[in-house]
Image (cartoon, one colour):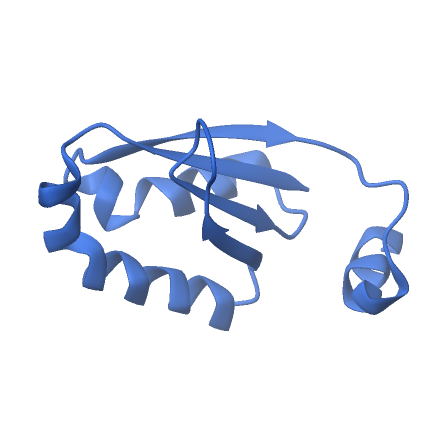
Length: 99
């Protein structure tokens, strides 16, 4: 699994113009089943995304297609980890990890 940390590299006034495109892109990733959780960061990252397990190259390609990245308004830092335990409420993640 991965945690993708998005950091703005442009002023937020510029980022705001691309926000509708970014939001639509995020929606599509959820529809495809690639993203599990996303939200605003409270610290070093401006936004945080938790993804399903996938090949790292695939994740890199997905993140590179984010309108924020395409327009050079933000960059991603990715943390890969192997989940060894999840809450029962996240049964779908448990099943994905077992396969």
